[in-house]
Image (cartoon, rainbow, N blue to C red; front, side, top):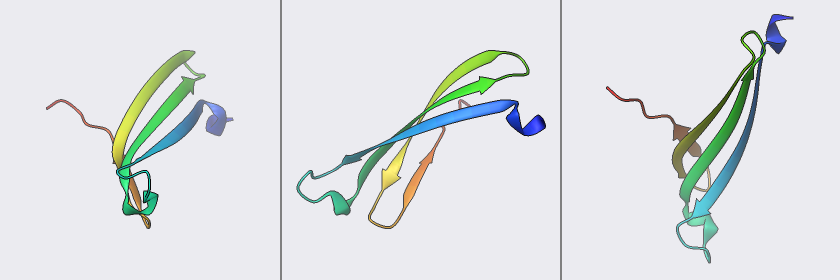
Length: 64
């Protein structure tokens, strides 16, 4: 049952630098909806990153 306590749904949007050449790379925006069934809370998070034709990297920045 523990594996069903946290549900996360993520959608990824790729924004190319040049629309005519999408394989050149661009920006990534990942939006996640997280539901924690232990505490019955809903959380939304957005992550940003970059992509190219052979990789996608994204992450979250935190305040120091």
